[in-house]
Each structure stands twice: as C-alpha cells, then as structure tokens.
Image (cartoon, rainbow, N blue to C red; front, side):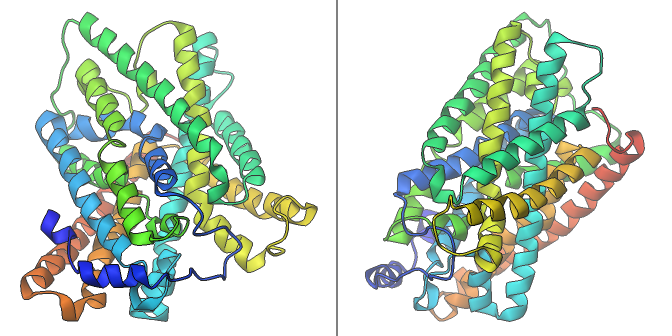
Length: 442
C-alpha cells in the first residue's frame, strides 16, 4: 500500500510548486489553516460521539475476529482512498475546493450534480445522526435523575436541534472553529475516558459475557452487511476536498500529514472505547455505550454533557459544505461575518436546514440504521468508488496496467458492496419502523 500511495511524486511536486491559488468563488475562508488544525478537524470527526455506538453497531454483529479485523482493514483502505483523493486536489492546474467541483472537472456537468446529490445525502444523514446522538445524551442525563418518562427522546432531539442551530449562527465558517476544536478534544476525552474506565470496572465485576452474535441466520447476514457499511462510515467524512480547501499550501503535502495524523494517533481513542465496550458487555452492548456503563451519577452526567456538547461542534463540521453553498449562492456577501445582514441570513437559512434535520431525527431515531444507510448510499461511492475512478481518469496516461487493474477492482468491488449494504440498511430500517412507531421514545 505504501508504494501505491507514493505514486506520481514528480507530478504532484510540480503541482505543489505551481503555488496554485484556490478559487475565490466562496464566501468562506480558505487556504488559512496549518496542517495540524486540519488534522484536529479530521480527528474531531472520527472521535465524535458516534464512537460510543461502534461497540454495539459493529462489534456485536461481527464478533471479535471479524470486528477487529474489519476495523483495522477499514482504516487502512480508508487512508489509501483519502490520500488518492487528496492528491487530486490540484489536478488540471486549479485547486478544487469542493468535491463536486473536482468531479465536475474530471467528468463533466452531470457528475458534478450527481456528486453534489450524493454528498448532500451523506452529510444530511450524518447530521441527522448527530442530532439523534445529542438527544440520546440529554435523555440519558434525565434518566439518571428521574425515571418518570416525562421527557421523551423526541423532546430531547428537539432541544438538541435548537442548541446546534444557535452554535451554527455564531460560527460563520469551518476555519472559525479554531478554539472550539480544542474544547471538542477535551470533551471527547471526557466521554471516551469515562466510557473506557467504567467499562473496565463493569467488565471486571461481571461474572461472564455472551459474545455470540444474536439473531436468526437471515438477520445475522443483513446485520453483518450493515456493520460493514458502518465500518467505512467510522473513518470517512465524505467532504475531504472541502476540508483540504482550508489548509495552507503546499496543500497536498499538508493534507497527507493531516490524514496520517487522523489514521494513526486519531483513531486510537476509537479503538479503545469500541473494544473495551464490547469486552465489558458482549452482545448486550448498547448502541450508545454510556447507557450500558454503571458508575457514580455525577460521572455519567459529566460524560453525557460532554458527549452532547461535542456533538454540537462535530455537527458544524459536517454541515459546513451545505453552509458554504448556501452562504456563497444566496448570502449577503463577504462583509463582516457578524453584521446584522449576515447573522440574520444564517439564522434564517441554517435554522431552516437544521429544522429539517431535527424533524427527521425525531421521526426516525434509529441511529445504527442511519450509520449503515449513510455508509451504503454515500460513503462507499464518495470515498472508494469515485476516488479510485477519478484517479484512473485523471492519471490514465501515467498508470501502469497493473495499477489500472487495481483501481478498477476497487471501483467494481466497492460498487457491489454499496448496493448490497443499501439493501441491508433499508431492511433494518423497515424492521425497526415496524417494531417502533414514529417519534419513538427509545
């Protein structure tokens, strides 16, 4: 894999020397952030509160051997695909600051529109999942003190949506997160360390755990396929060009540094909390790990508050491509980000977008299903299928027959996986929808 990544270096170094300017048709800030800030953006995404669900949504359906192997293998192929995509950032002598711009440059107008649609679906569903997670954290806090079922999950999701909107009004663009990334890292450490330590304690005090994969033969097959989609969802943003647009030149070299940071140091907390959660609770592990752990009320309260607040920051990262599009196409302009006109525009447009997110989250609060469907419908195509195919098209005269064959195998294989995983995810949603009513209080 190292040799595969380290290709066409002379060409990429030439593109770096060009000192290409990013396109100026955006209302957001670009080419401004050092590589380590971008690395923290990526790490914030990978260690968001979604990781509290991987023990239940990945390890339970797959078991120890397949789950562990899958997590490590998914990280390796995700790093490879993301590096390929990062190396295409300046293809054709121009920086492509949006995924759809890159696809449009390589394929034409139709793929520009299709890529934008895929990315929109991807980010919309990720953000819907974040709001569900934030609502679950609030519900978990309430249950610690009262068990009267007065405050139901849909109400908690509505509160979470309002808080996320308020944060979005005050942060104009992705680069403006800055200090919030530091707070996000601290918040992540709070809920990760709490879940890890309490899982150890519970595991040591438990007489034994059942690690058998639950369900009938048919349900095991569909759950396994859904878990594979969740594996790729765990590591990928679906918005790498938009994140790379914020990094200072040389943009390819700096983005590679940020990606290696994400996939080495950045994934360690994910592994720790996922493996320890599954070890402690086995096949009974919840899709929200803080609901499984036992410990002092104040400690669990602190962890859930941290999870809620970190989700607000993480959602802003994944909503930023939509915000950038709306601000650029319909916003008042590049004036003071905190002028009355700009703030009013953000309140109206971002508030409307998050209202729809929140409504869908409350309507269908099935987190594991959303992760599987998102991985199938958009993460597979955007991160693996398109990245490999765009690389073949862009570098077709510079690749050996063996390299071309390798990339085509990736395109075909991941396309088949995406189609299969989509069917499995839709089945899971159908089963859960028949078991639980709309606006369910899970």
